[in-house]
Image 1 (cartoon, chains in turn brown, yellow):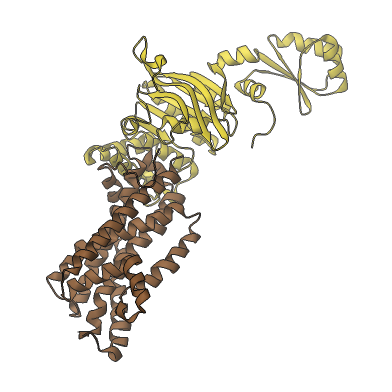
Image 2 (tube, each protein chain N blue to C red):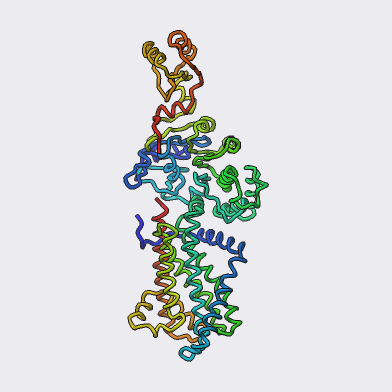
Length: 261
Length: 313
């Protein structure tokens, strides 16, 4: 018998699923490459240049430079989360792709692991597309900002794992709206993204640090792009790694419970 | 669970062996302790009304649904313990069309071949070869959403063959197809059979089963009712021929009077017999029937006799 915490047996075949999604992504690259580009511009103009005209700077940092890492972190979150909720749900439920895959030597664990790896990879690709835009505006520093790429993979894994848990328990595609609006949208606003969490009431600061994964991702991202790296980075990193491991393991077990009957 | 049935005596030569196989979903017993064996090179059919347990059995064999109890061996191995090794040698045509809509016909075959670890150059060659086999070369670069139902089923059959499977599992291979498309699939399955492939199929088209299967079982309510070759089953359970007459009071009382067993189906009376001439003569001589029809007995008669005529939902 399985339980939620049992370590799933994943084989290297998971990369076949990842590769399938990669091929589809690059075949429709024109559609896929635009959103992150546009997103970077929109945020920079609307919030950076718009609000930034009034705010000027936060803690001695120009406002646009303050939100630049948040733009990256939010993109990492949204990309992996929406890929592994709506994207995976469509492949699982409407396209029956998972059924087709598990008729081959792939196991359901391989399939879900491949989907999560792909969600994280998509986050990486979006960050790679956004970095030159932010660099062109001179709001991030190099070379430390290049570390945003591997960080995007880790952050992507975390949000893909969280997303896959929701996908595993959602009764229909409509109910996936709940985590989107109740979790993802508030997180994008209150995780030290567009203003420092120190502006929040103390209790909410603790909640943000304890429960909102994006808080930790934004914090590391900001250390890398400013750059202002301190030892606290390790704490954020450990938090992310632990949460990632937990959600990815639970996601695979929940999916197995849903699909193998 | 140790099992003398598998370990004792001769080496295993059957492709599939199942003993006391059970599958329970909640309080529904889908498969209720069935026994069967499929030999190498034969076409073996599972027949039965909806909900008989055919698909559940297929899923257990295909290593995608664990059994509740009993024993199964596919290629002599337990599906619970060696799913990847077994699936590497299986070709599966599922009941539901689950082609990948993000790819073309060629792309579907190529991508699927990659799941079996087939090297790209061989996968390419195999995909081209199979498109020809199912007559879809002209649709090579068309996305699957643009295919007709029959073309989709053919592509699924092709997809099931990318790994040169030792065992082909077909769940309702011709469901919802027009006669032309069905005949093409049958023809292809005959070719595969001639090449020595072992095929297991479920169907509720009885003409399909009679045409394709060397041996078959008829299932109902999770149990196997009978097993045998289509011809033997017809002979054993129905007889050679069926005489049908219009149901009238005269015919009914006459048959009762003559002590001839019959069955009433709707507005016709059916008499299963070894010699239709005699029955027909009796009818005309004594019962003044309106309409009389003689036809050979079919698997459908066996099926209806065994599984009943009540509508299965």
